Amino acid sequence: MMLVLVAVAASLWLARVPLGEVLYARAVKANYGRDVTAGLPDGLHVILCGTGSPLPDPSRFGPCTLVIAGKQVFLVDAGSGAGRRIGEIGVPLAKIDAVLLTHFHSDHIDGLAEVMMLRWAGSGRKVAVPIYGPPGVEAIVAGFSTAYAADYGYRIAHHGADIMPLSGAGGTANPFVIKEDAASRVNHDRSGIRITAFRVKHDPVEPSVGYRFDYKGRSVVISGDTAATKAVSRMCSGCDVLVHEVLNSQMVGQIADAARAQGDTRIARIMSDIPGYHTSPVAAARIARQGKARILVFTHIVPVMPTRLLHPYFLRGVSNAFSGLVVMGEDGMRISLPARSAKIERANFL
Image (tube, rainbow, N blue to C red; front, side, top):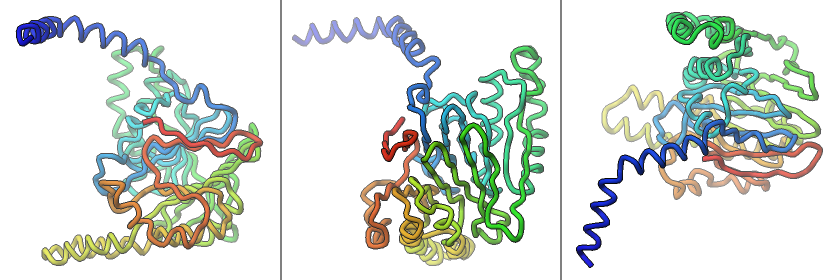
């Protein structure tokens, strides 16, 4: 018996190169052109492509949410690794029609250049991706364009302008202003899709906005980074899905205490400061209740959750504040709202 096992092992060892070649060819054939959006029914779909924060978390990429309305694909924020995570999920970056930024904290924009590059390379589009945001978005887009100017030139020289036309590189900034006497403004209203930007409270980051998406009787609200504010519940107003940022101040406080005990007063100060411009799980649950949301989905989760065993502690008190479904968002999670229906479907692409 031992001789047989040795012989089998030796055969597998000798065959490792041709075996690898066969397996790789099959994988390429099976996965090339993969598009998880192709079979989605008409409706409004949310895909969480990044549910993390500036804190290192191997399971969560930077803030990034895809919203698919009919055939159009919108990306809200582009945190670290957004482009790679979107590709890993199976959404072709070439399909992104526009990017919407909530504010300009680094963790919400540091993956933007990657998204623009991969969209350009994958699509061959002759028009750069439109990037919407509050005033200041012009400098963000211009800065990335300057940083990547040499790279654009290298790729065009290598592949040719017919494959990678310069006009499609980077992004085009589209700043918008919400008037002082208004709480929101409609940024997009065509093809049955309405996108409304609204003010949130993330001082001293000003302006900061959230977005509401409406399509064929279904609705999604994305809070962006914000302290607890009635602006989100007013904008939700019976929305199907509320995607809300969250920070557990008690858990972050423990990090601050640990830093202080180690004499690290700088990190202790930072950890003591940040709860003031974010929303606790219970406060977000109250907002969901006041806004009559059907589902509350947490994203931008702080602090890092290395295991789901911590979720009950993180969510303590939430069920008392909101009787609807509460979901701890994860990268790759999909929430689908079929058009003109009351159904809410959930799945995970990772």
